[in-house]
Every structure is written in C-alpha cells, then in structure tokens.
Length: 473
Image 1 (cartoon, helix red, strand yellow):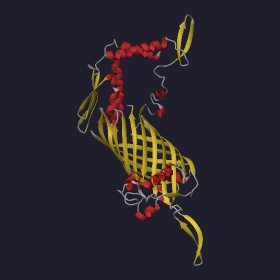
Image 2 (image 1 turned 90 degrees about the vertical axis):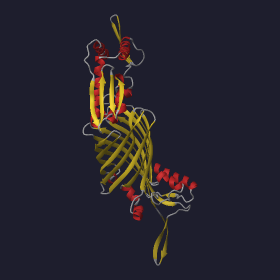
Image 3 (image 1 turned 60 degrees about the vertical axis):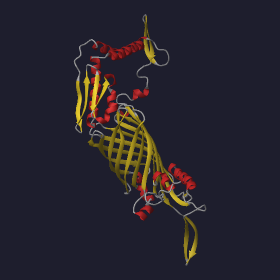
Image 4 (image 1 turned 30 degrees about the vertical axis):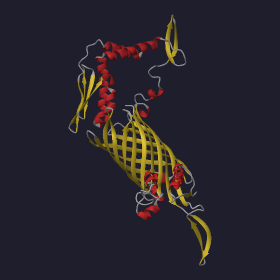
C-alpha cells in the first residue's frame, strides 16, 4: 500500500501549480573554464557545461550526468552536487511531469494495482483476496525487489558501501627479466647483464584479481604467487688433504642442471577498502591464507616450465635442479591500513593526487611476517572522452613503502607504473599496465644477497599486466 500511496501523491501533484525550478544547481571554474549545471523548466532538461562544451540531458536521464562527467567536477563537490541533482529531479518531476513521465508512472500505477488485486499462485509472494466474509492471504512476488543482489546493494548495501558502481578483472605478472626473458631470447639483451636479472632475489610473480567497486569502497578477491631464488650446492663425499678432512661441494647435478634454492609464496586474500566519508580518509582490511614452500607453488612451476621452453630457443638457457631445503609453512594473516588522499591539482584534462598511509600486519607464521609500514604514492591522471563520457586514459604512478618487522628486519619497495586504457564501450575499458619496481624487502634481500654483493643493488622487477574495467554508473 505504501507504493500506491506514493504514486497517488504523485498523481495529485500533477494538478497542483508548480513553481519555476529553472536556474543553476552548480557553478564553478576549472583552470578558468566554466563548469556548471543548470535546469531549464520549459524543456525539463539539464544543461551541463565543461571544457568549453555544452551537454543537454532530459530530466529522466539525469543519472547520465554523473556517469559521463564525474571527472569534470572537482572531487570536493561531487558528492554534494549529485545528491542535490537527485533531489531536484525528484521534486521537479512531482511538480511538473512531462507527458512521457506521466505515461511511465501511469503504467507503473497499473502494474502496482494489478499486483495488489490479482492473486499470485505458486511458492512466491503474498496477496490478499477478499471473498464475501473470508480473507485469504497468498504470498506475493515483489516485481520491483525480486532481485536479491540488487536489494542487498540498495541504499548503504554491503558493509555500508553504497550501490555497486563497477567491476574490474586484472592479471599482473612480474619478472627480473623484461618481457619475461623475451628480449634476451631474441638477442636484444644479454642474460644477467644490465636490465636483465639472473634469478637471484625476487625472480617471478603473478596475481589475478576480481574487484567489485561501490560508491564508498571496493571489495577485491586476489590470488597470487611470488618466487625468490638463490644458487645452492650439494655436499659430496669427504676427502683428506694434508692431514685434514674436507667435503666437496657440487653446484651441478648429473644432468648439468644448476642447483637452486627456491622459495614460492602462494596465497589467496580478500581485501575490503572503505572510504570513511570525511577528509578523503580510507581504511583497508585484508585477510589472507598463505603458503611458503621450496619444491611446489605456482611461481616455481612457472619458472621451471619457462626455462624448459626457452631451452629449445637458446642452447645456453640455464636449467635448475630445485633443492628441498626447508619445511613447508602455512598460516593466516590480517593486514589493516589507514590512509588519506590529497588532491594536488585538477585541470581540464589532467589531475594530480597523492596518498599517504600506515599499515599493520599480524601473522600466525611468526615474527618474520609481522610488521608495521608507512608508504605513499603520487598519481597523475590524463583524461580523454569515449562516446561522450570522460575517463582516465593514461595514469602514471610513483610509489614507495617502508616496513619494520617484529624481528627487527627492515624492508623497502619503490617503483613506477604506467596504465593505458582503451574504450571498448561507453562504460567498458581494456587497459594495459607496465612498470618497474626496486624490491629490497625481506625475501628479496635474503635471496638476492649474492646479486647485491656483486653489483651493489638488487635486480629490477619488471611488471606487465592487462585488465578489464566496467562502470555501471
């Protein structure tokens, strides 16, 4: 009955005298260029101006303004403006509906009346049928709220994050050799020289994730694997020389494979990021299941397979004999991060923003995995248009992170990445991401010590990935 009552109020408002609702809802400037939103009562349309261009939207399509011009408006004004726009559209529609809006609402009224007066058979829903003095109740299917997912995401939704706004799929890889050894395979570079790594320290990584983006946050499910390597040896038989006993050390097996100690860290994690709604502060929480092993794991299997395949292309490709030198470790971890974003610059076609954060990790694997951290990033975004919608075509990111472990070990990571998006539809984008990272974290140092002693640095981690992003609004 509540819905029929609301529709009745709407129909009643059709016959009332409406005041003129024309005028500006918002007006500002970006780099000296007007950014404004106004309403024309005569045509029941909104006019949005930005970047020296004008865009008209019928009132019934007011939500397209947020979808297509989100990046045209200073971030400090977006939330308040779109709330104002939504209220204005509702009030002006009730006050002075167009003929098209009347048809739509009258159809909805007929549908609602039909729902409440016609009994539904079957297991769903509840309706009342009055027959003489007997009232029979049936379960009625709700034609507007039947979708459980949409209902759960209504209003504040899951974790009070608001409505679902987008989805993202991403696959990222990393290697101490650029293009995963591709340049070395065709002779452009030499293995172990310059930008090419030599399988010491962090040598390979891969991660895949799916993200659900909300108005006030993001939920991500991620699976990852990281591989670290160092050269190893096997003790041979003892022998006596000058009256002293010695043991020989073998660095190759009978097949000519080089002994290597490898660590594969594999895990799956759930990340929840929530914007708190004031001063651009956010909280991030990660729950993780992790496994550390020397003879199994995705990273180990990929490296072994890759070197075997390269052996067919180049005769001098090294092959490894992976040693069993440690016990497998399994455990659970929880990470909490608090951060703040800063808008440094926002122009017509670009913007610059910074983020600073601090984090804390707890782990059942012991003090070697527990740490506190501080970090930050600087990101430049360059905008373009895709079918009338503004989107970040390029973004460049510089970042750094410092950790202090419970057992007094320290770690540091710094890097840069470049992302290029390609519009597929007015809401869907494919993107390519590439980057370089200097990793001096715990296991990079432990397994890359030989590289550091020889060259005074650890190998560069080369990153390459692809993804698909879709925006619902």
